Image 1 (tube, rainbow, N blue to C red):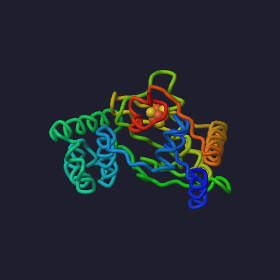
Image 2 (tube, rainbow, N blue to C red):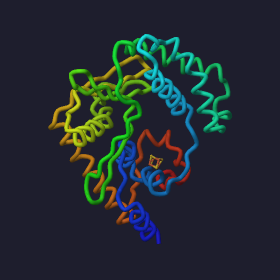
Image 3 (spheres, protein in one colour):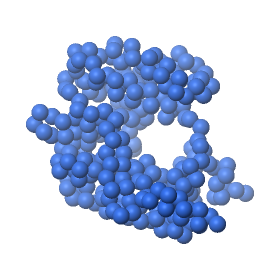
Length: 263
Ligand code: SF4
C-alpha cells in the first residue's frame, strides 16, 4: 500500500525533485527525508530559521538602494518593515516571538556583523534570490535559490550565501560548501561560466569562508549528487527509508514519531 502510494508520488512528480537541502536531509537521515519530502509533514517554524529569513530579506532589499545608501543605517531602517511583511505572511510568528525588542536587537546585531564582513557600497550585485534549475537526467531535476550572485565587470562570477549561524568547526568546511558547489555546478552547466569564487558569510561569529571551485570539484559534486539521487530513487522504489541516529536527532521535530526513538 505504502509502496504503491510512493510510486504514485514519483509518477505524479514525474521526476525526482532535488535541492541541496533535500540532498542533505537524505544524507543526514533517509527517514527525515521521507518525513519532509515524501510525507510532506508540516513542521513548526523555528525562531532561528525565521530570524535568518528576516535578515536575508533585509540584505536582499539592501542592494536595491544606490551604493552610497547601502549602510547599516538603511539596513536597520528596513528591518521593522521587513518584519511586518514577514508577520503578515505568517501571523503565527507572533506566538513564537515573545520578546519583540530582543528579536529585533538580535537581528540588528547580525546585520551589524554583516557590515564588518562586507562593504556592500563598494560593489554591485547582479542577482539576489536567483533560482537556478536544470534537468540532470530522465529521472532527476535539480534546483536551488542563490542568496546573491555577483558578476564583476571582468565577467568573473561570485556566488554568496548568508548564514546567520556560526561557521563550522575546522574540518567541516567542505561539507559547508556542498550547497554552493551545487549552485556553481548549475550555473556552470547553464551559462557555460565556471564561477570564480564561492563565499559563505557567517554573521553568527563574524567569519567568512571562501573557495575557488575547480572543474574537477564540480564534476565530483555532480557525481555525488547523482549518486544520492539514485539512492533516493531506490529508497522510494523499495519504500525503505532507514533511520540514522545522530546528534541531529535532538533538533529533529519528528523525534517523537521516529521509530528509532520509540521505547
Ligand atoms: S529523530 Fe533522528 S533518526 Fe529520527 S528522523 Fe529525525 S534525524 Fe532521523
